[in-house]
Length: 97
Image (tube, rainbow, N blue to C red; front, side, top):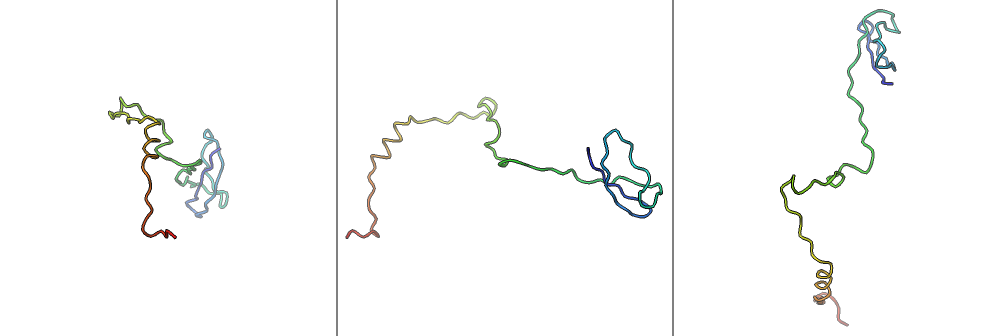
């Protein structure tokens, strides 16, 4: 059930009332009992729960809709061979004692 905030135009009393959508709006102030109560417009409360909103959270679009070509993938064996074939040289700052 939504909670509405009302304010009396006579005594400036402000109060909250939980009502159904089908309920009629409040007309009389509970403080001074006079007519002239109006709803106060409030921003809607929003709560974002979860890990966050990232570009990777959304569904991937097809390459036909974006117009981009899919990335070329290298075989797993090629990258492994390259990493083992290049020896590392010691830097001049290291002690060779």
